[in-house]
Length: 125
Length: 125
Length: 125
Length: 125
Ligand SMILES: [Fe+3]
Ligand SMILES: [Fe+3]
Ligand SMILES: [Fe+3]
Ligand SMILES: [Fe+3]
Image 1 (spheres, rainbow over the protein chains, first blue to last red):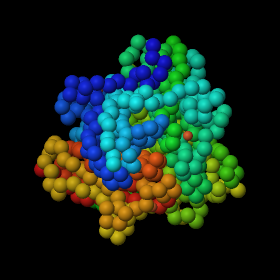
Image 2: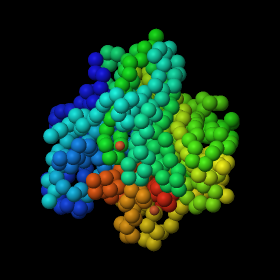
Image 3: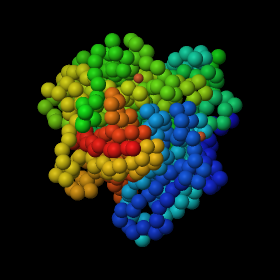
Image 4: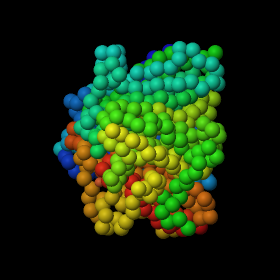
């Protein structure tokens, strides 16, 4: 009985569990300087991409050190799952800038296996 | 230090805390019969709606009793926060049908105060 | 050969063509006073809702009389198309307020039959 | 008096008009082989990124030659516009695969200046 949605958000090691969103960003970035942030699923273990079973979106958030609330940076929505045999891979690169160190989070959704999350620290000077 | 995004999802009593998404649905619904589901924020205590501070979206999920994963039902995105003095209220009615009892969840996002959640049980016969 | 996406947006009479989004709003609203706006698809002629063929979203826009650009009011995304036999109907009620007369627009997307649109005038005093 | 939303979608040369979404993809791709698709705004002439004025999203579509309807490939939503001085740049790389030549489209939205579009042909063998 999980009364909270957040208790239903799953995590794990993305090298073993294909649903876990992977976050790639430089370990160190400069204050107020644009950097690339990659959010993806399934690069190690591919996830199905069919009408019946697919990843719908990945969201990226950032929470500055000492802050209370995560800020939404970007959402990448994967919209083609076989229409005319067109497929959207579960991969997105976005660009952002921040003002200090903190934590990058990713939240993703599989239409069969629900919500998954991951996070990495990022140092910003 | 919250390493998991899900540890940053806040909850509370919507009568006292203006960010908590409110879920309204019939206490009892019939199997495979469409019902209305209302997701909203701030009906008791209004939340600001300005360029600098506003609610961006509410998502609704459902998890059948005994199931492991929540299924996304609908997302309502509030897109106008003062453009030409047009405002989107934090209110959405959607329609859905389910096959058995379970839990309805809402997840919402304030651009300043982060992620909030709520849930209610629903009986389906 | 349609070089512009906008040339691929289809319209028609929603009573005969099931893809056309229907917009329902009061014919007259008061300046700066919240009103309900219903966007839906298929109330006259139902549209399929299967993994392979479904409506994904409807967006609502408003353009004040004399203004140049439409403002996005809300997006309703229909996310369940048979997962655990849960279905999202193509229906959303949102609430908004405006400052003067103009045109309400809806834009919707079927994963097989592409983009569709509709509009209605609204008088605001 | 534009009764159709599609008549309000603007286009132009992205080198002179900062709102026009830029689409970058290989001129030639292989059938059923993943390629990178970049959608962005403002690389030549930067667009403001403030609470009051910003780009909210870019959508990418593909229409195969001879097909009637564009298929949505991906949506990139830019969600941070100054919250804690965090900013989302108007840039997204996604990955997709197609089965034949056609047209790639982008549709984007500025909260002040409305809807904009662009397209490029893509050869697929
Ligand atoms: Fe899965
Ligand atoms: Fe708030
Ligand atoms: Fe259709
Ligand atoms: Fe603009």
